[in-house]
Amino acid sequence: MVNMAGIKTHKYKGSKKSKKSWRKHTDIADVEEHLDNVRREERTGGLLENKSDESIFFHDKVVKGVADRSGVKKTVAENDEEGDDDEEVYVSQKERQKRKQDIEAKKEEEQAKKERNGQIYSIWGQEKLTVVDAYIEPAIKKAKIKPKTVGKGKADIKAVLTPEPGTSYNPDYDSHQNLLKKAYDAQMKKMIEEQKLNDKVKMVSVDELKKQTKLWLKEMSEGLNFHKSEDNDEPNHLDDSSNQGTIKLSSKKRVKTSKMRKREKLNKIEDRKKNEMKVAKVVMNDVFRIKTLKKEIREEEKKIAERMKQKSEKMLQTATRTKRLSKYKFENPEIAFNLSEELAPTLREMKPDGNLLIDNFKSLQRRNIIEPRKPVVPKRRSKRKIYTKKSYLTPTIKDINLNN
Image 1 (cartoon, rainbow, N blue to C red):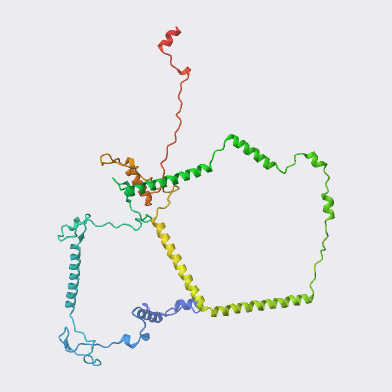
Image 2 (image 1 turned 180 degrees about the horizontal axis):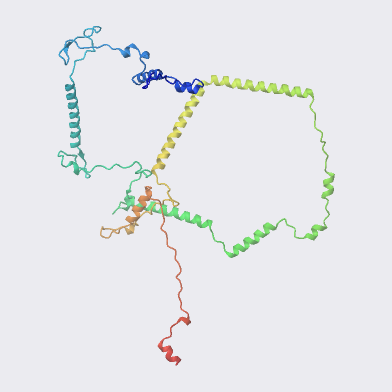
């Protein structure tokens, strides 16, 4: 190399002393160029040397006797046979675009027709009405999308239950008697439960309590000796008898002989052989009992299926019934009824039974919407006493005149 001053210079190649300098000053431009080419080929579908001929080259199939854009007539490829099924008619790009636009316009028209002919249902059960005019469309209320959690946990019970036929105005004899029987049964059940509770917490009189305490003392004091002097005078012969009855046991253990050990070993071997024979016999019996075993398996599967069915039915029942949502259990309201002599002969004389507010409240509890609850009674607090002392009383004019 010659610099601007005309002095010959050479390129610094670096020191060959260590590997670090070799790596720093070696020329690797050709290697990097090769790697860049390989990476480019991999990005564009892989290395050419690994590709097959079919993926690189292809046969051009041209329709016979059809002119292209340049006006030159195209012919069928040499390797293609005449009358091949793969022949396609050339379609220009403008025509293709037009076809696509026609299909999209048709789809949009069908969608608009569906939206225009929306159906409306009347709440009074009238016939379906079809909206023809597009101006009415914004006036139609769209159904609100409810979240999935709405209605989850509610019991499958009607909000308003059908009342008993006996509660109606001027009921027939049988339905009224059935209603009275139901009310009687409910009242009797309540009375029996109250009687049970009263029996459990029965109050005891003072005389009865005294008798019970005397009996208890008598029972507890039986077997106890209150005369200590008599007990001390009696001779104690327990020590002598215990000394006479003792037997000294030998502490020597029995040593096993070699004959006994051999006998035990032979017995163990025989027992093992017997157990093995038993197991083999059971296995052979099972092989011959394949038909019966299959039958038993089928019966067991049937039982399991029935059990699962019962379980699913029970789960459905529990899902639709009234659940316990608080410490209080849901109690059905009392049956509203009138006795035979209380039935009104006319609608004018008829009196309303029950309370609509309580009925709605109980309906919400029955359907698991709110928890059963009881009214909170406010605690009665004693009033604070206020009084004035004599020393703080202000003297009146009358008192002053009397003192004078």
